[in-house]
Image (cartoon, rainbow, N blue to C red; front, side, top):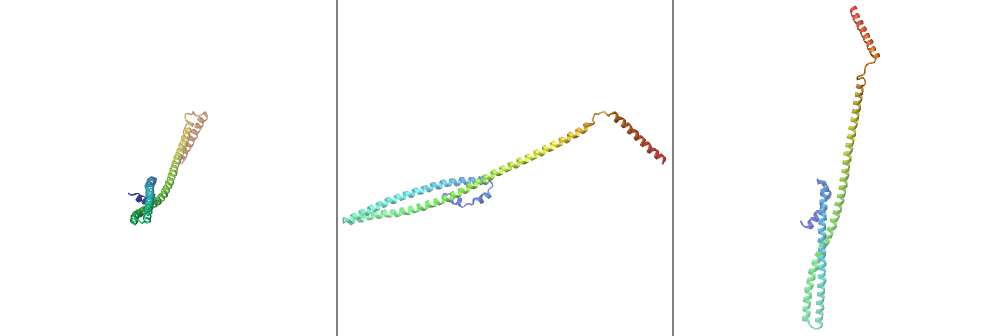
Amino acid sequence: MGIFTRVRDIISSNLNTMLEKAEDPEKLVKLMIREMEDTLVEIKASCAGAMATKKKIQRDIDEVKDRAEAWESKAQLAISKNRDDLAREALLEKRRYADRITAFETEIEQANTLVTDYQADIQKLEEKLAAAREKQRLLIQRHVRASQKLRTEQNVRRVDTADAMTRFDNFEERIERMETDAELVNYGRKPSLDEEFRRLEDDDDLEDELNALKKKNQDN
């Protein structure tokens, strides 16, 4: 692919549309920036070459003009000496140099157009590159913010879960201790003397109540 074709493709490309369709926008914009930078280096080198060619053509033109003027001066000298034959020869030489000037002027005009096109493309490509670098900066910022937010949310969830489990564990442990304490309150304790007599009295009352019921049934 020629350099002008690559430049035209880059300049005409819609960066936002390409990034929206890309699976990895950061990777794509990085590749695009690299392509733009490489192309920019190449097109600047080509522009420099075209400018050097233009300067060389201009030197050639200046040299040929000097020769043409020199032959015109010789023609005038020949005329002043009544040597029309030499004057004609000198004018023919001047014409040949004039023809070369015309050819050189066509070349330098083409070189001027080429340099102008290169410079215009360089400016557009630099603007496109600046936009891509800005897009890359924004993508990196978004990536950093998203990563930080994700880590924060993960830490929050991890802390919340850990705190909840700790609270449940502590609560369960407290209940188990309370249950154990309740079971151990009367475990292995010998009844007091008052409690023994109270049980006996309760037994007597229970027997009296039972006998009363039995007598009531007999009377009926």
